[in-house]
Length: 639
Image 1 (cartoon, rainbow, N blue to C red):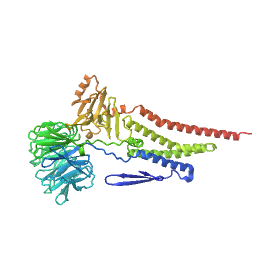
Image 2: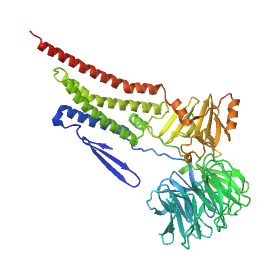
Image 3: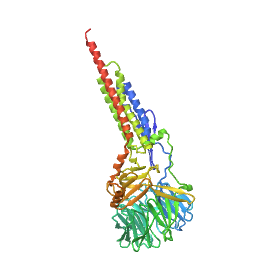
Image 4: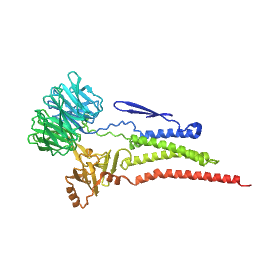
């Protein structure tokens, strides 16, 4: 933002466009009518706006923030290298034998969602959140081509055909097919009515399966070009699809915590695999075709027997969502990527964890948020993060102040007509009073926002974030919604998080400790204990406050959480501790602990001085009118 005597310049930059907005500041009223008062008011408006807008605007951010998490993984065909991607915009190459990073490909797009090796292992394709599909040469680590249709849709899945000649990816509601030989787009498959979230080629390359949020799976005959067959999965969203090695069976995972197996030839559902702890995010068949592995939205990896349709093993070790799973070509090793920022290798026979690779960034160092140390003005700016609501309110209040100034100017001029002493001074004071109140309100709001956020660790009463500490050392955090939120340990986390990782040397392992609860619906505090309910699929159950699939008791002294399935078990546990269980919605608990004596003080500071100023102005006008009546009385009195 720039400012001169008559204009403000705002420059908004994004990945695709730059906008320049110019606002011209006009005089409040024509100067030919009110002379000096108009000039003073216009100058005051420009000064106030020039001082206020930099505080409300977000300063240029030079800090780099790293969001941990492994979103996608893939084995090279020879099983020697693993490719991983996440929100740090890099495809990282890891040597399986040593667990060391051997390469890093910096993508143009932001937020990697999918990664895949070509069948010969020479190419890597990736899809990003910013609508880009990129092709990389593995040996030279150079980008060969960036494919994009500018549809502003996430690329959730990419897949090479078994012969390596075709690359497919889902983009919005369509599926694009790219000919790698001619480097041209082959065709665009349309038919889904909602976002395509998963795709997979059959082993013979003749069929492409696609799963969508429209609750359907489509089987596309890629070579023949005939119309696709539609499988009605009846699930809210299809998150993963996978073909069996012989191509006769198709598996899909969804938000409903079930895996459905389909007969590809007939298009009929064979069975549903139930018992998963959370939504099914990723799927992979073992090359031997005997087992199917699923990664869930909790922290588990389930191994299923395809013949008996039962769960044979649950792999534990991750502490967050398992977004990706993949088998080596020989089927002896399984790799998993999780939002706990680790990649883990598993023995498929024994289920033993072979190795943990920390997604620590280049150079083998843990990547942590680099937060700038702001000065005083930067602290005020960061205390109330810029958003359009703040700007709108500020401009609206400024307009209201200008209107009030005109009304007071006319009213005081009328009430003090005929007065000879101090009339000009009181008119000027009345005109400036609304702007003074506006500046005072802005200063008080800035003050309370900075104190609440930096000292009291509470939200600054603006924006979409609700945050407040609890008496037991924990804190509540809600973002965008108030039906559910997070309970986290404020003593050990500067930012809201339910887990923490410690890198242990010289063993070279990450220890992940969970000390909070996500997707909390209801709470009850009793001393050091927190009783509550949570809904693992809370984002899909909007406005359903009573919806819950698990219950817990959290001991805030030792950070230990005990989970219960039915609410009756939680009631028995509460009775043992002498507590009458009365769970309250998380927002009700937030309101109880959010407001303190400081907010009362801020309210007093906000309203009392303007009220006293206005009262003083009324008293001043009455005194002028009283003096005027005395003067008239003296002039009319006989000598």
